[in-house]
Length: 449
Image 1 (cartoon, rainbow, N blue to C red):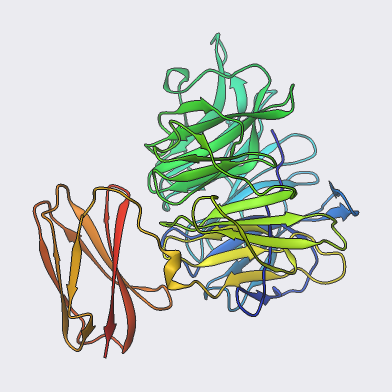
Image 2: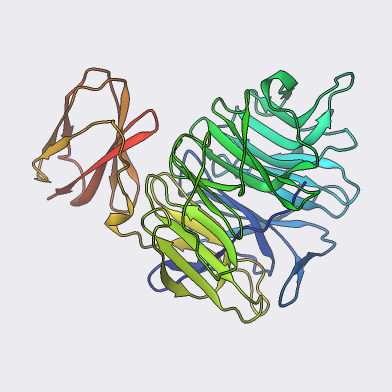
């Protein structure tokens, strides 16, 4: 187990972040935040209370954990309290929809808990009887793709009678009612002194990654990757293991001193320029783009708190603002951003929504998906025609309004080269067309009059 603090600095609030104080009003540190895969207006976050000084955050003996939620895209947040075991501590939270979410955690007696709510956080039930019971068991994260299918990832624990020690990972396909451990032959053997990190994962589509450290040497160790929802795993040695992915192929891994890039789902990594002379708290990729947002923090009381933006995979950086310290920045596939404040010293905790994303944020990767996509007309009353090269594989077409809400979705069959959109009933405004194929993306835009 490696406890990590994901922190992001709020930039210029008037241009970038909109702040909201959850009800009931409380002061806590947001430990992890999760956007629903099915609805980007639904976000859950879990927090804990800390002793804060100028340099460190030290965990307190919490009787409960605050869980805050929005169902309206961050316009309002409400908070309930989750209790389990003796002095609970969170590992992470994963959102399914506005009523359903999962939490992983461990109490002061090292009892592990997988908890789920199906009524918006009013009540929680435990779903891990019989698993995570070994002396070295420690749940680091749980993630669900939908209401049925999920994975739970823990520290290495030896299966009785087995000579190998692998990470204790379970999958479920029936809402967590039963869990099946991933067998040793499906994943790499643990390296000496290797542990995972709480809330130390990324997921895109069916792919999921988590990072580890060598706690004996106090350095980053490997990035694990599964392309099939946790059933089979590979691992690669890296100098940074906190990850963020723009799509299933393109991602970053970072530490306080190193920034790496992958274009092949994490099979290989190459170093890219890092912010120099800064204490890095967190970095995040905006999906389907080359944009990296990074935050820095010098002093927990006085800062300075600064935020930087790179539009070119770290080749250049620009300071874009300073403000309140926030954490657990996440972006949805349709470009909505959320963050939760790390524990403040002089006011109630704030949640943030990213309310300004310039059109140039979405940057097309250089991939052989559709070499050319032509829209006509680009200013339309009734319909828009799309022409592209014949598809080599099936693809999906989606249409989003200017607020990032999906208004249409369609499957494009292999061989298709044209498509007509009936936009006669759309509200006037700007729209984007996104065609995805095997994790790759092209984007076009039109205006409805």
